[in-house]
Length: 342
Image (cartoon, rainbow, N blue to C red; front, side, top):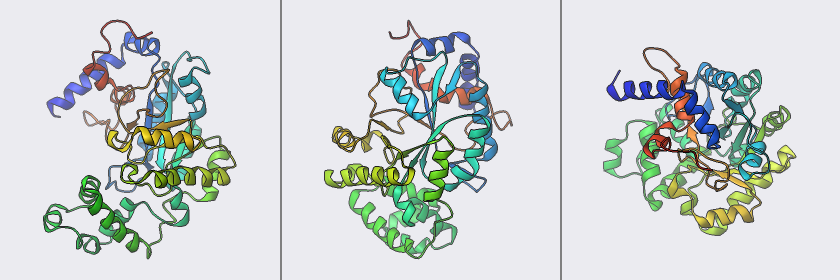
């Protein structure tokens, strides 16, 4: 084990076993959020998955902690806004992005087992067999058909792309023109593919909500909002909300930004969200939220497989809790020096 990994483990053990750490977090009215994508035994080529055992360990750790309480997205919003009082334990929200069917098949029974509420943010185009572009990239590489896509990229890109993950990372970092040219080709290639087995269906969404879980919007097509004009941003937001309200027969007022990095979010996007009927929005920016924070820039910790392995053990609870509570960013900002904010 490397020194950095050993140091993280040591710090995590020290703080998460300390009552002072948890009492500070309670007094500071902290409200962490976790973001999952897939819960599956399939090989994770894109860094989006956890295994069923891992997810079970994570939910067990939260449900048995004397310091944490898993809350629904609706209650989370009420606590954040001050409409509901801050509970006796730290409120934690579990969220899923994109709408993968394994969340319904594999994650839902585990959530029910531990009595944990969650919210699923759905990309609504998947309901019409229009896959998210990076799933098409993965399918092309899995079928050894990547040449159909790579042929349109620069020679330098072709030399440096040897896997689906490298291709996705390259396209995400590319300029707008190159990205959209590649995405148009991806959309064309996807027309001959069937993705119905990997995404939730209308029926799955209904059963998800009937099981007491919540649904939120994640746009229609998972675009880079920063690359779209405002009228298309509004179309993506309103369209996804309206589709999900019809399917679920519930009000949809929660939204997760596609990609969700700082550069993917602007003040005009927040205005569009408000105009589209949303009350809250989630990023993938790491950090901790607190009561009274801006509801349209909420931070989340994204979770993927193997993050909490150490000393040849598959799961160390202290590492999980440290990431859940954004311990690293708190230490960098000297958050534990002095008193919690009032």
